[in-house]
Length: 265
Ligand SMILES: Cc1cc2nc3c(=O)[nH]c(=O)nc-3n(C[C@H](O)[C@H](O)[C@H](O)COP(=O)(O)O)c2cc1C
Image (cartoon, rainbow, N blue to C red; front, side):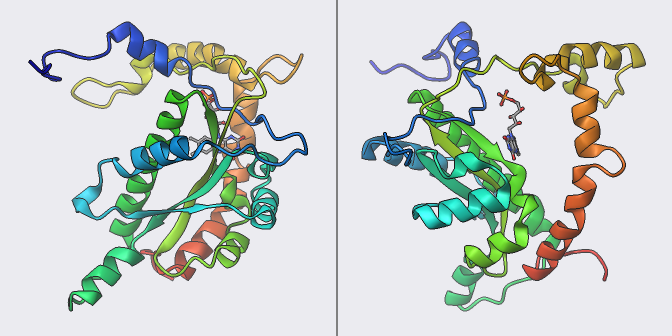
């Protein structure tokens, strides 16, 4: 008799929690003696790419593409453009892109005219890219690897579009590195569940809950002996004059260049 997966889970809740608690973002990987990337066994790479493609997808379309970074020169240049050095040394490195070009080509090949839906493209294209990328990362973690998502692609978007020859309809969401960990980072905290899971309607967290959340999150910003200050980290990214404001014009320009801008001029 075969087990019914709906009534007979193959993992216990404790095992599920334990698996997800092994997740760490890792930025230093085991390399070969000369410092070059340690290749993944072919069947490991095959399994994680299989997992990526098993991700659910909007409207059956699979609105994403991965650019697998293979040549040392391309790796080095993307590491530079994203300001994330581990792209050069990880066992595997990908640029995970939203891709609405391919579905348009399928329609054209089948004699259909492609509609105009740039906002939808960004909405579902990013969703599909993230789902596939996170499947890939989780599968790698099941095999004992760790990885790192890299939003740093926004630091050098124009250069990445040129280097990887990304056509209209294709836009990097982030890069993703994988490898055997050469560091042991701590389990990093998350917000209290009550702030992120709402019941029946959205509810703002109370001021006290937010203050408490800051205390809980502070260790995520610890660097060496320096105690963590989460607000300082958030300020560097999201406050007035922070790095997100600096990235904004480059992303808007890239959306326009790739035919994905739904706003006015
Ligand atoms: C979309 C996204 C972009 C990220 N960008 C970067 C990045 O550019 N560089 C980096 O070192 N880490 C990056 N990270 C990793 C986060 O810093 C990390 O996930 C977070 O600090 C939580 O740590 P944990 O994954 O170990 O729990 C990114 C993560 C995500 C999901």
